[in-house]
Image 1 (cartoon, rainbow, N blue to C red):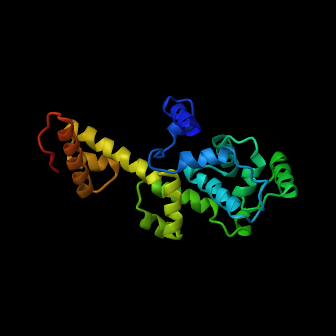
Image 2 (image 1 turned 90 degrees about the vertical axis):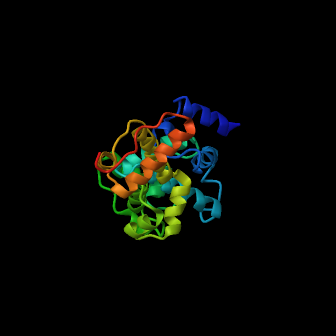
Image 3 (image 1 turned 30 degrees about the vertical axis):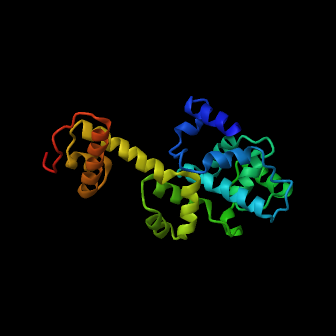
Length: 231
């Protein structure tokens, strides 16, 4: 029931998730956020599988904001999770690759409050570095394949797949492109123009426009003349 309520708030604009480049239907994001809303990181053994899984989910959320710095990421993820048991310093500690420790967290917060620079936290963790996660997010958001994203970011395809399964970034991009193709087919946009407008090859543009015409045919809409490269 809680997940239905959350989804209703999303589609009615009451939650900011609707503005994110994610596929809420195909991804695990809603289920994971529902779990994170009531999860207490402090009640489990630090090395337990539950904590490690939740840490991974929290860190993978960084893929949503590829251009954000650590403080901005911490604030955005903390707001998105909406869990009173997980505070701002917990999120920052996890993103920085450190174990939850009151001493460490207080030290980090003091540094931030006085305008100091936090050291490179990624050197202290075996987890996928946050900048790498952000890079994967950028690749998937731009429609890159899982294999290509893994190659570009020098990570395993399993890591890329886990992030895509959680967020549906590439899936959302594909659906957006399909919607554009349908609109372009409806307006009789040429292959050349569609390819240029969307930064794709002419061969891919031609395939997508064919798909767009097929969708229009299924909808029973009157078809425009066939699209050619030269038009």
